[in-house]
Amino acid sequence: MSRMQEDIQYAGSDTRPPMLDRTDFESWQQRIRLYCLGKDNGENIMKSIKEGPFQMGTVSDVITGGTEGAVQQGPVRARVLNDLSAEEKERYKADIRATNILLQGIPKDIYSLINHYTDAKDIWENEERFLEGSELTKDDRESQLYDEFEHFRQIKGEGIQGYYVRFTKLINDMRNIKMTMSRMQLNSKFVNNMLPSEYIQY
Image (cartoon, one colour):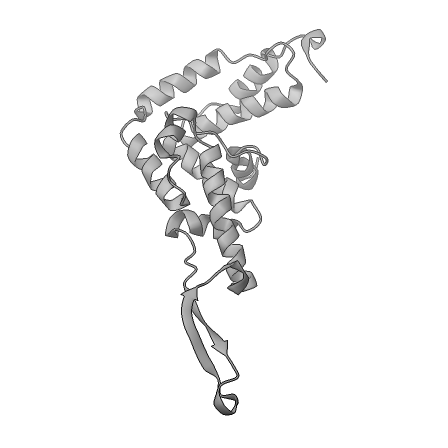
């Protein structure tokens, strides 16, 4: 499997942002970056997260009709959406999209702590602050993933695709912390833990 394919699988579903797993915050940040960059206007979405929201600024309208047709500047006012160039509008829209993506990717208990923030950069930085030091150690995480691997089974009524996606996510989580298993181990685990065909949805 190519690195690009791994990254795409690692990023998760295209329709919903990857949900934060508080035991692996760093991995979630990486998946969110990939998810954002895979969206239309993705670079601007990431810019909103890293640099903060687009600043509308001010403008002074040109007023004509003075003495002998002289051009005059009107009072300074805050710019509105209609004042923005096409490029600036894309940046403005990305701010809204970035905020939505981050808020949709966090569990309710964390959402309740940061839902008063409207800027993606503030949300991103406060998530980091809340979760800093709360992640499991690498050894704890490795032990947890080995346990998940050991007990991994196809669920009754689960289709082949759903089973494959769950298995791939588990393997990607293991690779992310440099856990290694032979291809034979992985293939055997996948094949030997499939349910008989009468229990599978097609």
